Each structure stands twice: as C-alpha cells, then as structure tokens.
Image (tube, rainbow, N blue to C red; front, side, top):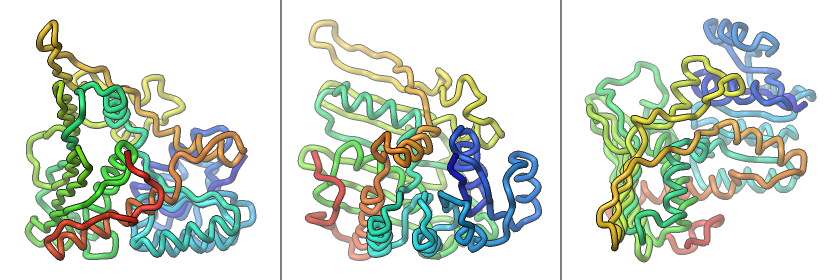
Amino acid sequence: MYKVGLIGFSIGGQVFHAPFIAGHPELQLYKVTARKKEHQELLRARYPQAIAVGSAIDIFDDPEIDIVVIATSNDVHYDFAKAALLAGKHVVVEKPFTNTTEQADELISIAAQKNLLLTVHHNARFHSDYKTVRKLVEEHAVGRLTNYEARYDRFRNYLREGAWREQNLPGSGIHYDLGAHLIDQALQLFGAPTSVFADLRVQRDGAEAVDDFEIILSYPALKVSLKGQMLAKLPTPRYALYGTAGCFIKPGTDPQEEMLRSGSLPHLHADWGVEQESTYGTLAVEDPVKGDNIRKIRSERGSGQDFYANVVDVLQGKGVLIVRPEQARDVIRILALCEQSWNEKSVISLAGELIAYDGI
C-alpha cells in the first residue's frame, strides 16, 4: 500500500485525482490539503479515512507519505514538485508540467539523481475519443493522413470571478490548460514536428489570459491543427481526420469527466468510460470496388484509472512509465515556442528542440 499526499482539493484534486487514487487497491489517499470549509466537508463525506491538512509542508514532511500528487494552480507546480522530490517523494504533477522548459529539465534531473518516479497527469491519453482516433490513425483508416484537427471548444462568454486560470499568471490561458492535452496527443501520434505556428488571442470582454488559440504543427506530409476557444455556442467536431481515402469526424467528448463530477467512482461503475452511441464518430471512405462506405465507429472505452495503475506498476518494477517527464517537458517546449511564434508572427523551426520524440 502506497500512501498518497494530495496537494490541492479544488476541481483538479476532487475530480481528476482523488477518485482514481481511492479506487486503486494499492493506493491510500492518506493526506489532502483542504483549507476551505466546503473542501473539508466534501473530503470527510467522500473519503472519511483521509486526513485534511492545512499546507503542503504537512505533506512534504510526513515520512509516511510515498507519493505526492500536485493538483494546484500551474504557477506553483515547479516549486511544489521540487520540494516533494527533495523530500524523497515520488511525484505526480498535474499538467501542464511546469511553466518553463528549464524548470522541467531541473525536475527531471533531480528525480533521476534521487531515483524517484516523476510523471505528469496527461490523462487525455486515456480518453475514449482520443483512444478511438489513435486506433484509426494506426490502422490508416482514412488512407494516408494529410490533415489532423483536434479542438476544445466551449461557450462561456463571462469570466469566473477569482479563477486563477482567468488571470494573467505564468501558465494561465487555455493554451496551457487545454492546448497542453492536444499537443501531448499530437506528439504521441506523430512525433516531433518540423515547425510550429501559433495564434493566441484574448477575445472575451475583460479577459486577461489567452482564451482562443490555434496551433499548427507541420510535418513533411501532414498538417496538424490544434484549436480551442471559449465562444463556441454550438458544438464543433472534437476530432477530424482527412486522408487520401476519406475522413473521420468525431463529435462529443469523453464521458469520464461528467461521470467524475457527478460523484461516480470508476471502480464501482460497470460502464465506466463507455460513450453513448450518439457521440460515436463517422468514418467515410471511398472503396475502389464498392464505392462510398459511410459508417459509425464505436468509440473505445475511456480508462483514466490506467494512469495510476501504471504508476503503481512502475513502482513495483512491473511496467514502463506511460507518461515520461521528458515527454511532458516537450509539451512545455512547444507551448513556449507557440508564444514566441505569436509574439514574432512567424513560423518557428523545431530542429533540436525536443528530447523525447524522434518523429515519424
């Protein structure tokens, strides 16, 4: 049994970490930072065995804790991860990993020196929609892929009062919040691009942080377009694949977040991660013999629990780390180059910039 200290019990800690930690038979949600009264009450109601503490130091200094999970605002990821590593803890950091590549490199070095596990919660790799897209890409379902589009579009034309993501802070803006997922997925699918171009805008009245982005990753024979905005009143396709044989259009989103927000626990839910048929994607391809073939593709099953299962396996010497910190570091490098691209209004070459991806 590995004892876990969870730093942060707002939406990130409540929804994306605590349920999966508590649901794993070899993890114990031992201590949780919960300063707000409502967070303390929720913690007692859902996880009565967990101990609420007032600060991260209470977790760093506890010799009983094996793993520290950092689910805080992005601006303190680096500081808390470094403190945890120096305290001899294995560390899980919510994405984005850090705010700069230099910070990521330092954390990777410390973890290696101390022989500690360090990983980043790029949980979108375990989403049903992405797993479906990955399967179709690997099967060359649309022939030779020429255009790949992925997007996070929402509608919220107002600002959330007091929300750190709405403030002009290091690591804020939806390109760091949502774009990090899309970049990580693209790197997993296609490796290192040759160049990047980004358009980063602040569009809502009174907004300070980026709330609209488009990132174009270029490959020798492939264009990857990653987008996100806060002013999409009607649904847009989540993914779109275009190739020499046809296309695949995927609406809807992975169901796990909605299930988690409702209080469902993955280890107690028989249909965990299963999409409704209404959100299945459509594959349309041209068959040389039969002509057009248009059909729905059953979505793969979402499996967010696989992230922490992998962490346990690695600690027990039974597996290879799925989300390596070097991969998460490369996401941060791409984000930094996106900001450079927008500031300079130029295409930025990626020669030698990434360390985990060789490209395909």
